[in-house]
Image 1 (tube, rainbow, N blue to C red):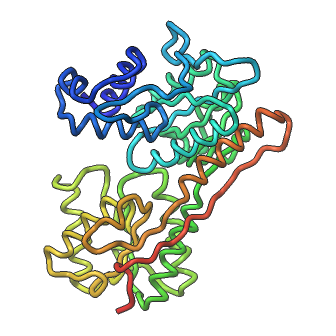
Image 2: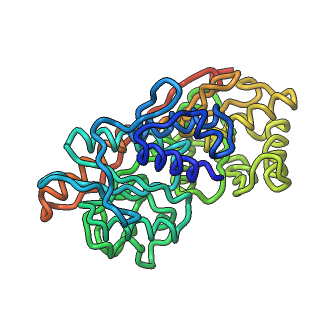
Image 3: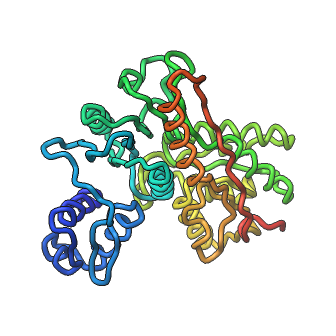
Length: 360
């Protein structure tokens, strides 16, 4: 059973019975109690359950969803709002955003209906349309697509209710869609500037696949090099690890090419996105007796797990909480004043300097 399916199964059981015991759920789902306890922690962080000794229960203010409607919003008294939210994942980057959205919505007396698309384009469309049909007042969306293709209409443009994109930029042409994003290009410039001030002159960018963030990081990376009077290392200025995972032949070949460039002195610093691959890189550098920050300085991007390695990694940290809060504020303002000018909010990330980028 997939992690998100397991979460939904636990949540359904809690809502059916009011509370559950970890051992009973583990036996029913045929997983370990440790796995269920971690799932309960995730649901508690989202505000969907309350952890208790040995299990979980419903929050005190929970109201059952409308019967028969798979995307139904909870019934609410007159004047209370319900926001829908569709994000691609409940792990890594998004938990802090989700938590901030839930808290900001609750502070305004609004309910939040959350759906996870697992990067399924058709699924996220169906989830959004189901929420609209169920009567949510507005939507917060982080669509899987829509960032790279600026010519074709985006599927969410005709939903017919107020919406705010979260960590996604809309088309520069077509309907004006409000959004809240991290300025990732600024974050990459910060990282390059920091590395350059530490005396690094052969700075590379290492990213994973065609994520919505990668083009923005490359934009900021190249701008940062230009401002520092530097050129990217020839042939390895921007290395894309693709969509494969560590241990697969394509991933390992690309990583080895990057390590070879470090060993040859062609790279003396790198900005790496995401954190997980920065930790893989750190381990493989050690396996080849290449030192950090001696042979190569590293700045990770996202700061989800960058500080957890044997050597804490410097990292650019988007303000995920501020993104979530700002998205709720933008949607609430649109609902309160439908005719006000549309807004697009860009939030600056911060650089957290640790041991991996010290001067030589």
